[in-house]
Length: 338
Ligand code: EPU
Image (cartoon, rainbow, N blue to C red; front, side, top):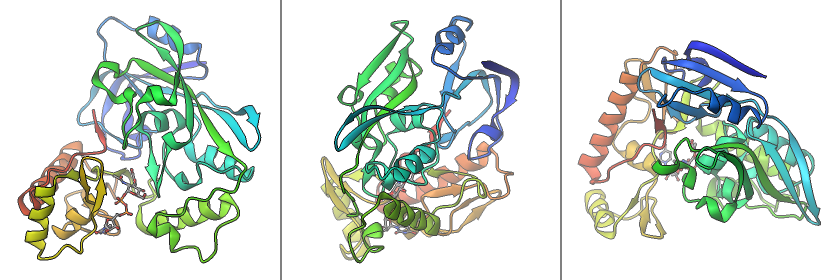
């Protein structure tokens, strides 16, 4: 079934709860609805497909059409002991799928427990947490290709996954591929990944069930991140920057030592944006109706559900400017601005 609503208020379908209206909001239940919906679009109308809206900031009203998939289903499509391939509908909540996997003692996605968002979006954004990324377990993405006017299947390697990045985020493919299901590969073989320091410290012996890892991840998340159903936010607002050796040296000179967190990665040094923002004194600070989360300064929150996009953008600008001024590093938002 396809449902449409005109002049729709988007704050109810985004976790940030920032007010913005769209011209029309469409929801649908099966892959075959996609070409039908597309065939009804007026030429040149703006079209945006969203998931659970957990990583979005509408900076103003969106005059076009916003679509959302309600495609459900979690189905084992191949078993090759100890591996199983599981096809998951784009409209399933990522955490419902993770709970399903843990209930069956299947490893592979437990480190992503508690991540807001839906399965379709997990394959666009390559969501990640606690040493694991969606692309570690994705084998195939099934989509409708608007250019080809046909259904296509992309293998994981075709998706060019990177840190919170994929081919689906490229400007030339933006809005072109509409994902309707994702195939994840899981395993019944004991394979805990608890190298991430915050996770490792939760265990004195190796966990024997993905449920143990899931519970530890959820506890760590709850101790740092706001629950979006209670305190609206869009999760990490900024990406962790990768900086050059010269920029690193500048930070060492500014700080007077090199004991701050920094990790060698391809192309330079990764620095936690949270640390940079924290050092600039932003943690817990309020600016009108928006605030920097007191437990994790990477998150901007809308505690009273009264914030406007302008307030968020002003706070973003102030944070970016102060980090730039103090450390010479330009923070890039992770939250998608529409
Ligand atoms: N830190 C501070 N002050 C703080 C908090 C953190 O200095 O108040 C520093 C600490 O040095 C800490 C480091 O920041 O060791 C990293 O913090 P954390 O482990 O919480 O992770 P993060 O890099 O801030 C990333 C993801 C999160 C994900 C966590 C856990 C990004 C942009 N964010 O945060 O993802 O949950 O790792 O893996 O990569 C999201 O994408 O919405 C999200 C929440």
